[in-house]
Image (cartoon, rainbow, N blue to C red; front, side, top):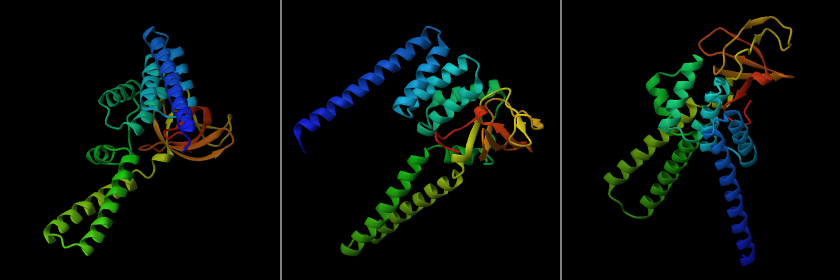
Length: 246
């Protein structure tokens, strides 16, 4: 490969990282100065330009938390949790935001099971599944070509099989994550049909986790887990946790 091309690529990457660091530092300075609205706008701009980053989502959530905009705060924390599910500060702030908004999570799983399947991100579970399957396949090939201790092969194969089963089960239980959304506005109103003047069915409250359904114009069909409330929300009042989701 051309040396000049590699040098140019390295310079481009270095420049991009420098720009990101400068913009992130500027947004952090706005936050420290108490300009939480300005900081939130800057973090949003960084995400739009650079893509999902756990640290930026976390600080974005903190900015909205300070503004007492709990719906956007919880959305930002949830998006950060997709990338860093074990960050203790993130989990603590997410819990505080949910408490402030009285928007407690109801996902239908037993608490200990939810803690297990949420321990790793979906990408980490996927890598664990793929790695374990690759190891098991390689072990079969090697064991067929070279004489290995039978006990060691059986134990290794058993562990790999358990990891495959665990990762597969976790991914299955989290299959609906792409359809999870967060209510953004306190005034968000669920309506009987996708029209602004349709009958009001209730207000789920900011930060509430909902299941996303079909879209119809500027409206999104939602269901509130653990409640009978379901209907149409204005698209501006709800957002998918997975960026680019339903």
